[in-house]
Image 1 (cartoon, rainbow, N blue to C red):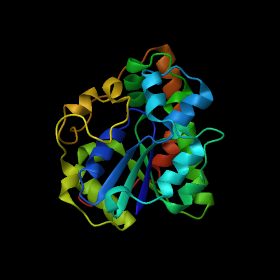
Image 2: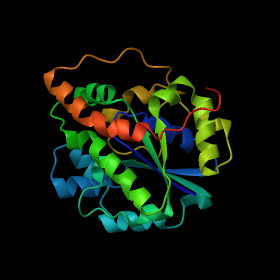
Image 3: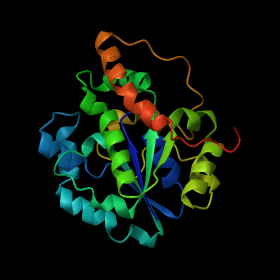
Image 4: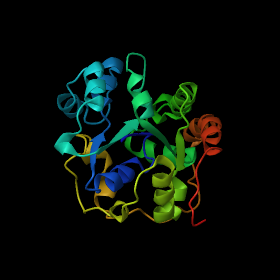
Amino acid sequence: MRIAMWSGPRNLSTAMMYAFGNRADFHAVDEPFYGPYLRRTGLDHPMRAEILASRPESALEVEQSLLGAIPQGKPHVYHKHMCQHMIAGIPRDFMKDCVNVFLIRHPDRVVASFMKGYPQATSDDIGFAKQAELFDHCRAQGQDPIVLDSADVRADPEGMLRSLCDSIGLTWDPAMLFWPHGPKPFDGAWAPHWYGSVHKSTEFAGPEGALPILDVRGRALADEAMVHYNALARHAIKSKTF
């Protein structure tokens, strides 16, 4: 099984990758199109030089690797994708050979968290419109993609991950609920800038509190994203223990 998990930044995506990466039957891939995305856009993201050095492949080479043999002979692979990376010139044909899952989070929380590390963020950077576009792309191909809300995962990790496994035909593994402290061998080169809090963790954080207060610019970004978040939230699966 090839799972493509589609998320924006600051969206529980790294913790989800750690959950699947902790399974003995999974290989994990962290944001494979980040290098081609930065080369095509010229964006000056944190640790740009390190990212480009670690991701030298062309977009086509990345796609071929995603569909190639899974390392270490493992039966399954988990691809952590950032929706905003899927710009013109980044191939999508591989999606038809994947189980596509869309991980969503309330825009207020995404904007507040992302702007701490990248204050010049734009709507393209947080990826909500692209996430909705990719969801529609999957449905146009005849797929029925899964939607998972990060708030539900944090409220009930086992129930939601069991529901996810059931939905995609994957055997449940309790190893998904915990992972070792610290960096992981499959972390991207950008981990020192973005993964500090999750490196301190060994399991999913608990339920989130009240929504953050945003400044004027952050409020505008979140409001623009809400229509896309709401469109996907209508399809979100729920825990079997709710």
